[in-house]
Image (cartoon, rainbow, N blue to C red; front, side, top):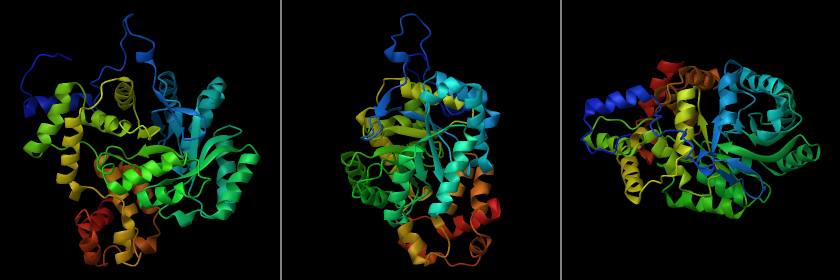
Length: 401
């Protein structure tokens, strides 16, 4: 990109971001002979106390991977060898697609760090999901097995530990942990005291990373040797350009050679206690953009980080911070507000309407039916983000129901 200084007009900005989609502005690879091997290698970090090194960028597999074998192949070639999936993703098609890949390229299995998840809330259900996942992905073991979507550390207990240790002793899994979209700091702090959780996938981004509680939670997990993978790192999607402040922030990154989407990834990588970022990369354009950001050695400046934080503060009412222990308790848990908000995020911010509908319809029909008539005013009064929860809940019912 030219280093010549120029004013970035709104029209030119929109032209740039429109052409790049997710924003492959940073050149992903220097094709010249001058490029060093280090510059062409995906950086890795140790995953907790496991001794295993994982790439700082991981492939989010909540898509039909059987339709994307070339995408998986390219990800592996570019060093994105941490692949995340789940028993429930695409009704099993995500795991089956990975299985087809390993059938075609069996030599790649030892290179790939496979993570899958179970949403079963019984030990028998977890066993069934694990065995299904092994069969679907044509592998003898899972590198990291998660209990999916934990919102309270009491969701996993001593029986869970016994189950995990048995699965490890049988060689079916190497590591065990959980993912969390709600009450993340509480879950991390709780896990750090257990002594048997190997890894956690947590919602973590430029909007959440500055809170004192989240900082303490991440530090506690690092000290406990728990490997952390960040997800939902875009914090609600692309920086908007509705105001001059937003336009200035987005334009600042474009001028420096990367998009706001790439800048948000870099902000998370600034924390060395985050082993990897799990990113949904449904096409080569987004994969290339994210790989470029990972391989590029340029760090965000202190001013960049301050501006991102200021932007987060000014737009906080647009983003659900996942503190469902506050809002859901105010309505006595009648509706899973956090899950519904996540569905809206999938649809509105990430443009993945099909996934949003699938997750929304996974909420029991009797629960969804309450949304139309339930009074959310008490939840709105308690919400630290000052979100219009009632309107958003009913929007979800109209758009996704």
